[in-house]
Amino acid sequence: MNIPNQWQLSGNAVERYERVLVPAIFAPWAADLVALAKLRPGERVLDVACGTGVVARVAAERVGLAGHITGLDLNEGMLEVARSQPIPTGAAAVAWVQSSALAMRLPDASFDVVLCQQGIQFFPDRPLALREMIRVLVPNGRMLASVWEGPTPYTTAMWNAVERYAGAEAATTLRKSRAIEGPKALEHLVMQAGFRDVNIVSRRRTARLPAVGDFILRHLAATPVAGTVEALSDSVRRALAEDAATALRPYADGDGIAFPETANVVTGVR
Image (cartoon, rainbow, N blue to C red; front, side):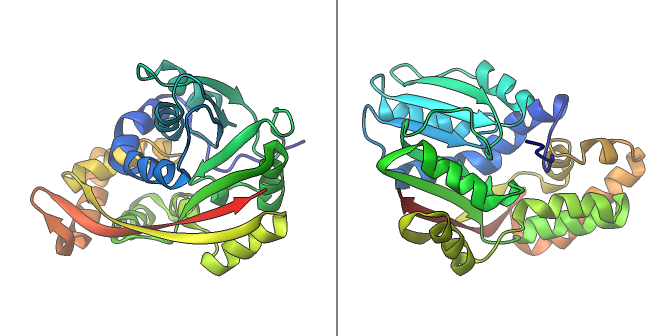
């Protein structure tokens, strides 16, 4: 099966993703997603589109030594970084599998729970990916997938600055990360794939980011447009960061910024 690449990182961008974006953006949401899943000791959990493994590591602590976690991602570079991260004492073992979400190299009915954090929007065939999640779940197994509700003041300021200084193509690539149907459409998509007891849970938090001018450049260095931004001159990169920081002044919080962010978590049962 020919799977087009939609959000692939390479080289140093993957390590920057784990070092910069995971603690600042993804780790708080990972803890929230795993808490909603109400994992039990001994459960078998699949983390689809696991990236560098933040959801898988949190889940491993919840299911304990009797459980088992599998992290699946198309990007081998992400998995290399995931494998290098320590697993807490007393947590489940984690198996890392390089595979497309559209054709998982995993047995039928082999997981009690499937989790997916911010992956659905990148799947080129969302119904197929959801059917694959059903296939690998045991009867009555449950699925939880989170997606951003939409852009935030921070992402909007960053995208606009990128478009002005690095071009429309780079901005379009970044906008894909939050291009997803609204809650009703997402609910319908999951129901049509064959899940039952489908529900949408809206989760909201105040996101806080440090020294936003500097953070934006570190953020962009951990995305697929890293090369495009790095190719700009130092003065243009500084202008890009200052442009976004200026737009975000209304959200100033000490040395950083604070702004509302919402994720919708869709849940379903096989």
